[in-house]
Length: 104
Image (cartoon, rainbow, N blue to C red; front, side):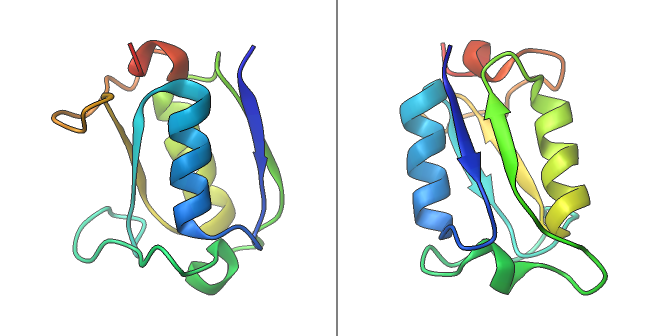
């Protein structure tokens, strides 16, 4: 099963690449938890984007995790917003499907 580990030292670019490689879906990363406004810079680390009051840490992401739960966990850990989109980044994935299903 596809899975990868992420932590605060990981750059946004690496996160998006690992996500695409493991699940086939596209990951959009924003500077704010609301997913409105600016996209995160690819060279930023997750720790540098982390909002005040969020602990950060390590997370193992498996392919059977549901899209909504993944987005929520990233928000809870780092205080940043992510959205999972389909493989060609043309539409957002349903929150109720798994990460693997989002890439198909």
